[in-house]
Image (cartoon, rainbow, N blue to C red):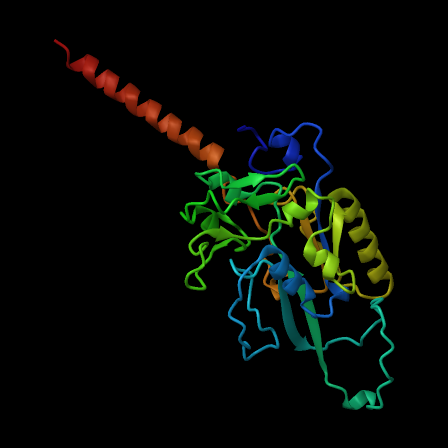
Length: 303
């Protein structure tokens, strides 16, 4: 369907894809303020979805050893180290009864960790889905975007179209039957159809990754930001929760404690197929003008 907001702007993705009586849209709310960087989500994702080993090597600039989202890393916990500019405040982190530190406050390290578990955003307007020539990518009844790797031909159009750089073609390990095939988070589609939570959300010990109805998650996220502001964390902000943004809002939203760029997220993403209707219109007008010109030239040359 090509319309004013068919490739951007707020829509109900499942209904727009033709589903009738679809369940409420499902998604993630990742509260980075309570992420402890344990990477249990990464492990659970790999185990459930049979995602092969990634290049587990220390970056040299961080304790992060899984680098970034890619075809072999559908969940990635970023470790961002930065100088501490403000005194620590109570974020409501769960406690396991750690012993009281005997280190003097003045002797403690003056840096701060920002940790965030990143994942496919399951955009309202998903460019990867728009450009897929084989139908390998499809919109599920839950409003999520799923890859059927047995249909994908590895053309890579979706890789270039994603404004977040999430989807990627698998490059290894050698002998893997899915090498060359596009891969990304499916929001554990098979678990959703069985009434279960995605594996990453089920494994998160701090409930930093929350799964549920997107509208309910938005309310929960807004309430959490309001609470943090009351506690003095004025840098807390939501990312991906605006239905009027460049991708029509996302099914995966994040509570951040700094600018999106600090976490490696684009500050103002726009679906890369947004201008297709206008481009088709202009191409049609140009073609029509050429045909009219050719016809006039033919008529004038007739004796």
